[in-house]
Structure formats: C-alpha cells, structure tokens
Length: 126
Image 1 (cartoon, one colour):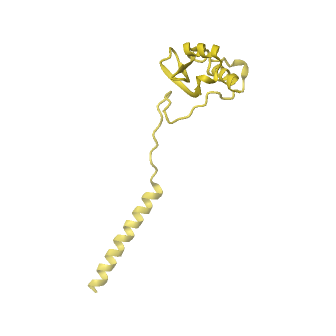
Image 2 (cartoon, helix red, strand yellow):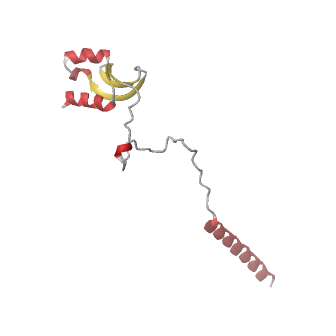
Image 3 (tube, one colour):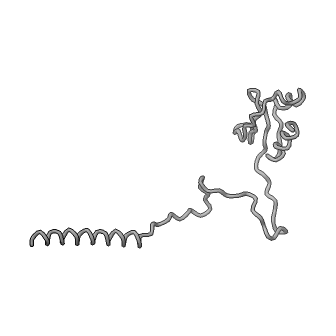
C-alpha cells in the first residue's frame, strides 16, 4: 500500500508541475522595449521618399553636403564633404573615360546630389 502512496504522490507532483508550466506559457507576455522618442536605431529602416497626400504644403528638402567623384588607385570613388568619407566605391576603372575627363576626375568633380553623380557615370558607361 505504501508503494501506491509514493506513486500517487509522484503523479500529483508531475501533474502540478505540468499545470503550472502550462499556465505560465498561456499567461506570460514578455514586455517589449518601448523606443526612445525621436531616435532611429541602426536596425530600423526609414524610407526617405514617402508619398504625401497634400503636395502643396510639402517643401523640398535640400540634400545635405556635396558629392565628389574622384579617382584613387585607378578606380572611381564618391566622397561626401571634403573627400573625407567614402560614400560609394564604383569599381569603375579610370581608363574607361576619355583623357580630358580622366584629368578632371583625378582632381575631383563636385556634384550637388548623388543622382547627378549617377547620371554622370551613366552617360559615360552606356
């Protein structure tokens, strides 16, 4: 008879542990971290060109900085502001351009926007 009491006790402990585990899984909701206002984390993606319903009140934002297309080590690079930060490595050899343009590219050509840099490159590669 003592054997049955031990088995019953072990069964009761296992059922209680299972019930508590099931209740924890059902009712537990992890707290989600709330973002800090006006801070964009590196993992977030924020599109720049959102569609706007009322176009009359939208002001065009000027792109910050200037872009310099220059040749280094025989390849073209795009720099931002005073040639200190490389913005884009084009992997385009300088030899694909005419001699006159090669001289300009060795000194660096400044553009007001990245779109103009890409248009310039496209005009010589197509």
